[in-house]
Image 1: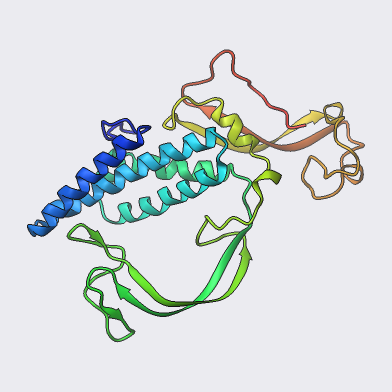
Image 2: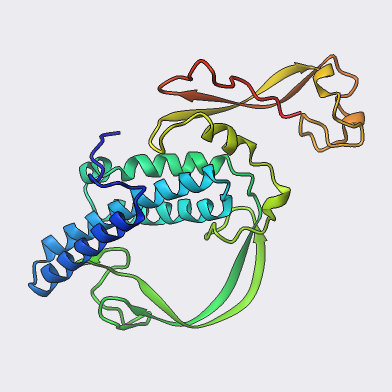
Length: 270
């Protein structure tokens, strides 16, 4: 990643908010003067700073075991990255750090145990354009395109007169924040292990999902009535309890900067 992130302390919330406010004031002035190019560039600068600062907050929250907060912040990064990508050059997107964050947000999300979400189905009375407030109809649309920026403002279609009809339970939600799980019942050990081996949110790492064989005597704590470690879905006594070695899901973390000599190389989950 090209290290062109803003020269401010991303862990200092006050400093980040102050910089965002200054950029927003400059954007307002540019828009009032009719300098759309400058207003749009300041919008990009604001979104890029929001992305990297929110990402830093998310990783810090994971380290503090505030997993649900971090999950929602990672989703905000994902959404903002999408809008910024659609409204900036590839060079700006990469140099701002957004490209790095987009890549690593997906990696962090893949380590979460969340797999069930609520998805509401609703009827929308009508939409209006956030730029000109035009009421959008099939044969009556304004000139603004949803998802594009105009004079420093992102065009969205705002929904009115919402009526919720049903809520479905899904595994691939549109909105990832609607997690159904109770965090107290979940295993966040992958996130804990990773956090114990990185120094900065911008450390580079890879995760390779595979399997690994372990001798049966390593599973002495697993009752035959428990789910089998191989994750077949069967009880241990009906599955792998009579095997000499048991193959279980395994993940290898590869760190660009390597591990320090005191780092825990392998963590056995049983």
